[in-house]
Length: 496
Image (cartoon, rainbow, N blue to C red; front, side, top):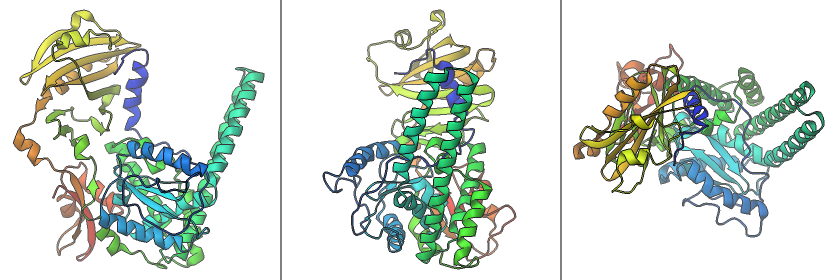
């Protein structure tokens, strides 16, 4: 149940900041150490860790984490063709691994976020969002080898030990020095030590990973190339907005020009650019048809409109707002720190919507503002509230036996709350059967450039996305000023 109480300010600010950018912190350690097994086997079912050796404590931790990972990242993405392609890359890397007896199993996560990580026991996770961004097998190999490098170097266990040391040091400083400047300086030094420790782990994993990629016969320069793609992706989403940034690779992996230069320096140990295979054609064949963006179960964002075929409802936000669609709720942020949240609740059918608003879940409610309304033929109720320097518009709508909530927040001094809230709430409507049937998920499609086609004309073929030319360049790792040639294979996003 949503509560607009003392944390209302933090809630609104949190949503408002969600689309601003990515935190370039250190690689997040989900699990420590690794488990010794043998052979190689790709995942072929949603729960891949049940076969881990019994009575192994690290394996038990992995087993406990696996369902949480699936829940966080939308479950497993099932596509045998795609999984065979990914398994081929993992298999190539295991042949040159520093620990050749380690068994690796791959799970593709059904998430548009761009991420990859590993658990003890050799359980590798990679999102379909990352697969959509990579452009050849060598880039995928670079990402996976980096994560395998963390496992090989026991970075998870080392990080846990370091974090425990810093927690203890923080407690000692707080107990002895209290809240004086010396204590604050000591705590800052502790955070800097942790950041440097994490950075060193990332650079070590880069070195291990690039060595594995080169020894496996892939293009060792792929690591630097994909880091550049990640940087372009970050820049693109910082303007366009996207799904939960905290779930992305760069939220936990620092990305700097110096790191790219170091990656290229490691690659030079294998020769000049052009050495190794990229295996581009088979990679693109593997991702052809890959789901892109939102799943049907979570509804679709098309520009400034949210449509859910399962629920059969839709609403729009004003121009200049960015919609972020997650499993928990749909949020949107706009100018002036204005935020919108959409979700659904189950209430007694006999309970009126004004009574529901008054039932205690809204703090700072203005009782006199509660009033019944009708929105596009649907029963509704409006109200306003104030809390901690913020003002809120609350709209609840009953449609198809379900109650939906549209909550709009703005700073107390803002004059834009009412026009934004009215624009959003009055746009709510029930989709017709034909509209629901016409909604299709977006997919990555591989097309061959025909004579006379340009980046602009190819990007124009894409549907359901904004800033088409910019996205085309990001997906195909093309810098401004680059061009396409007849016969090239490129990625586009379409609902066909």
